[in-house]
Length: 132
Image (cartoon, rainbow, N blue to C red; front, side, top):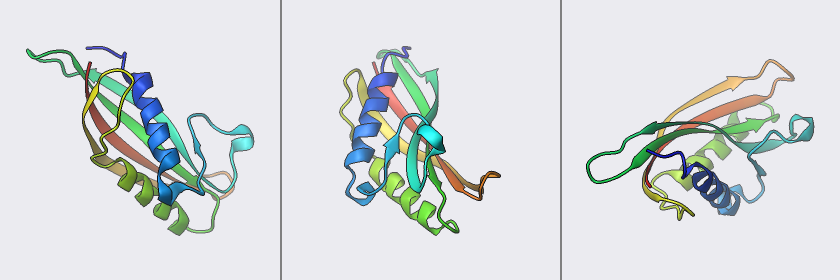
């Protein structure tokens, strides 16, 4: 098992989301923007990695969160963007700088109101299987 492909996966996710046509007007970040961000935006968030090596070679399962954060009234805008994120990533064949993506699947999503300012946040959790 190796954590070696984590940076390559993050870079590929960023490229895919930033280039996705339905997200053209939505900023994609891998860190909280200064001031906490305004409008609707996408955040590449936390990741958990576990060993899934077998007799054929090394591998890792990456469970990562992509968040949609919006200060728009209601959940409609956040859900529209979350659906586009899901469409962009489900079964995507991302080219990685290290390792080979075997599969990418949506696992679950959670939508909630944030206490500060009434913003909405949707966390989408995905699983990527990578051979290293």
